[in-house]
Length: 618
Image (cartoon, rainbow, N blue to C red; front, side, top):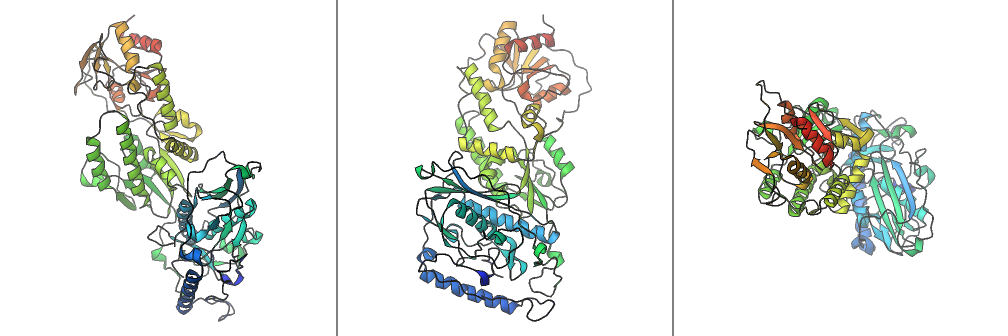
C-alpha cells in the first residue's frame, strides 16, 4: 500500500489506447498478490509483497518521468467559472455512497474527501481544440499535506485503505464523459475486476495510479469541464465553447451509475474478511465514528444555541470563533461541552476585532471588509474539518464561501439563517432605493454577483433553513424549520404609558427612517432615536427628537421600526417583554409575536394608522 494509490489499481488487465511514442505499455504483475496461492481457502498479503510493489512502482514512475515530457512538465490548462448557458455536450453521474456498514462508511467518507479535493483542481478547466488533458497534469500527487485522506481502493481483489483512494471514480466519470463528447482517447487503463452494474462492467472505466497510470484525452473542440459533488453524487460534465459546438444538441443528463458495494461481487474488505493477521488490518480501537455532524458557527444567537443544545450528539464537532464558555469571554457563548472535538479560531477573532475598529459604521468599504472576514473564517474552518463530517450545520455568513470552495460537496448541510438570502436582500434594497432616491445608504454597496450566485446555489441545495425569522422562513418554504424567538423575561414592575415614539435603530433608509419621518411630521410625534444619523445630519429637521440612553424604554408610548431590512430584532423583543406596544414592518420577522403589530414594508398609510392606534390618537 502506498501513499500515492488512487483507488483501484490492478495492472494485469490494464490497456493503453493510442499510446504516444514516449509512453511505454504498462507492466503486468506489478507486485501482484494472488490471495489463493498459499491457501486454497484464503491467504493474505505480506509486508514483503507490499515493499516489492512500492519499489516497482517507483521504478516505473522514474522511467515515465525520464521518457515522457508531459510527465516532467505538463501544461496546466486555465480555469474559469463555468457558464450555464453554454452547450452541454456530455455528462456522467455516479453515486458517492453505496455501503452503510461501519467499516465501509469510514473509507467512503475518505473517498469523498479525495474526490472533493480533486474536483477543485478540475472544475472550470478550459481545453482548447486539440489540447491534451492529463489527469495527473492537473491533479497533484495525493498526500495528507494536500488534504487527501484514506479512501477505499480496490487492489488484488480486496478493498484496502490508501491515501487518495477512490479517485478512480473521478477518472471513470471523466472517461465516460470524454467518450460521449467524442474526445480522442490517448491513454486509458481498465480495472481488472468488474463489479456488476459498475462503470467497469460497461467498459466505461479508467483506473489511475500516481503518476504513471494516467488518463489522457484530446479535446475535439473548445470545451470546459464541470466537476461537482452534490450531497450524494459525483457529476462530471463537458460543455462546449465557441461555434464548433453551437449546433450540438445538449446531452440529456445520464442516470446515476451505482458504485457497487465490495461485498456484492465477493470483494473483501477489512470489515468482512476476518483476516485479522493481515498487516493492513486496523484494530478496533483505532476506529472512529463513521458519521459525524460538524457545527460551523459564528455570531451567537440564543435561538440557535438552544437548537444546538437540543440536536448535537456526543460524536459531533463544534467550530466556533472562540470558546467563550471555557475562557469566560463574552461574545461567542456557544455550548462547547459534550462535543467530541472543539476547534477555535482565536487569531481570526483577534484580527477581525482589530480590523472592525477601523471600519466606518456604514458604507461599501465596511461591507467588503465584513465579507472578507467571513471568507477567512470559512477557510480556517474548512482546513480543519474531519473527513468523517458528512453533515454540516453552517452559519449563513460562511455559506457562500464554503460552497464556492467546494467544501460542501459530498455532504448534506443545514443553514442557520442569520439574514435574508443575498439575492433577496439586494432586491429589497433596490426597491427601497427606488422609493427613496435621496438616500445615500440604500444603494452604496452590492455584493459580487458570483458570490450571490454561490449563496443562491448553496441555499437551494441545503436540507434545512433554520431560523426564528418569519420573513426568512417564508422564503425558505418547505425547507424552513422555524424556531421560537427568545423573548427576555418580563419585569415585574408596573409601568406607566410614556409619551415618546421610540425608533430603536440608527437613522438609515433600510431601517424605515424615511417612512417614520413622514408619519412623525404628519402626526407631530416626539421621537426618541436609538442611534446616530447616518443618512444626513439634517435628516430629522421638522421633527422633535431626543437621543435615548440605557433606559430607552422608560418613557416609551410605542416602539416603531418600519424597516426594509431587519434580521435580529432584539430591541423589539425587549419592548414586547416590557409590555410596550410595538409597530413593525413584516421585514422584522415578528409576525407570530403577541404584542407586535405588523404592517407592510413601505406602506406609510398603514404605518400611520398603526401608530395612531397604539398611542390612542385619532
